[in-house]
Length: 225
Image (cartoon, rainbow, N blue to C red; front, side, top):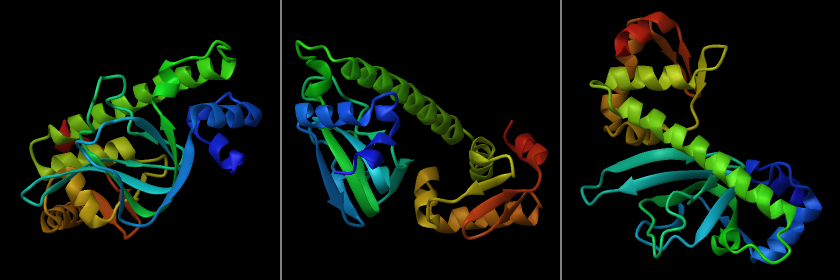
């Protein structure tokens, strides 16, 4: 088991590798590899586990009978998922988790976090503290998406997304495919492509395969505020 890889996760911040190894043994955690497009868990399954993406790429999505898909968010290396409904009796997942490329995932039983042993190990306390911080960060991420989806037009939604995501160099790295990005905004791919091309024509952005460059932030802000 690659403890150095596991230790990179914010879940284990402030916890040494010896303590991590003890935790893995005590909690009956396991590491599982998933191939591209493999489902990690489905919605309506009982939420018994916390998941940590050690390496790869995972999308959190909800599929509808109509064939439409809504992408809630993308999980990056070291991040946790499957954490929104823990602690509720027989709570069910509200969404699917799908490995979009070969991924390595740590699976930790939720009951480990709620049943502190008589030793009350310091790392156990730190682990719970880290989970609370990560869930706070997750809530902020979801609030940002609600803000984006509350916009009236697709151009406004794209502008808000870019403003939230851009770095100091005014670039937004595209970790999602065009299809996945369209699902994130809740639209069809052709609609997304038309809006991106219109915004590029208006000299607001420059679209590349791997990134979007913001050319005029002020005009983007005028578009959505």
